[in-house]
Length: 416
Image 1 (tube, one colour):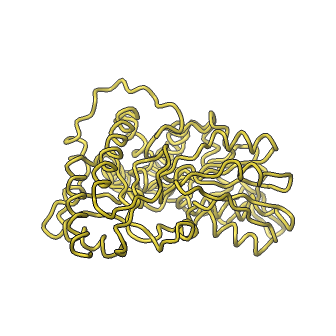
Image 2 (image 1 turned 90 degrees about the vertical axis):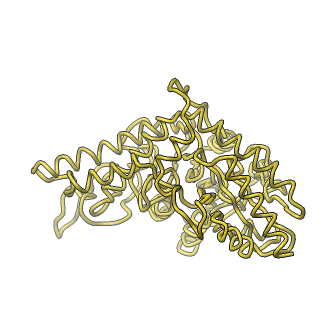
Image 3 (image 1 turned 45 degrees about the vertical axis):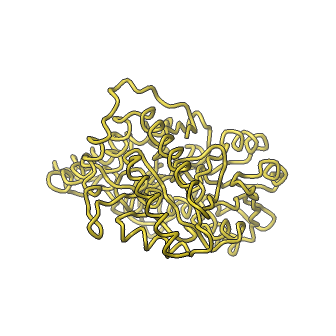
């Protein structure tokens, strides 16, 4: 995967055994087997560096942020706002003012629908695609029910790519927003986001990219992409759960009304009226997930310490090896064969139900995801209820993929 050019890796090539040893959960035994964890698209495991940083916050710096004059509050504020600066750098944002902490990509999209979408109305249109996660469908449907804005859907080809020509046809002077996934969580398809952004901007239309599945796998430079909004979740990029980021161009964020009311998002409150804080604080009501933000920044540090070149080469090797191994299994059908993919393979074996296959694999200590992966419209496109999904990351190994292939052979025989 290569959404943007990878930063050069000047560090020594990481040793896979040492990398795996840095993730305590990978040492877990499941049904008497060391776990082979292939559910990374749902959530990734956490390295010791992230766990230790969260632990240090709670043991040494635990206090509420902003406004406190005592030392621990100052330390917590410095760490929290330092995390914002770190993530701005990690994402290639022009300023930390463009980084809003949320509970994750889902909350980020809901924030946009409620705030940026507040001015939308009947006759306006939002473009989404048939491969979107439910989190990038349902908030816009709720907005449609409130305002009358219409959703237009970009179709998907049989190999799992967006129909770009149809996308261009859908763009028109009624389009208020293009909201598309950067990398498909179900198929692994890497969408041509530069072309999409250029086409939309040619008509003055802003673009939101759901980057939850992109940021764990490759560097993303939002300033270079020139995208208007971008969202991601920490827990998919080796950080803690319950925290994420909404990025927005400063002029757009400044024009948007607050989403939630409470502490930290205000400048002054009286019963005659309230004035609101500057961005990004205008969109961060209440006590934030301080430890989560700090842990997310630690995850960014960890990823860059490995080097994107090594990460991308490791995952490409895993994808190619797994595709070759699984393709040898009789009756196995891969769903999503786009030429540009992240390290995700969704598949079915004959007429067996994905849940049954996943259950057999679990008894062998192999963790995969089964079901519709919160992409039911996409499953309907293929005429299937769901898939088995194996999603890989840099800490996986060829030997684990061999176990997966052997387990699938056994499942195929048992469930035939």
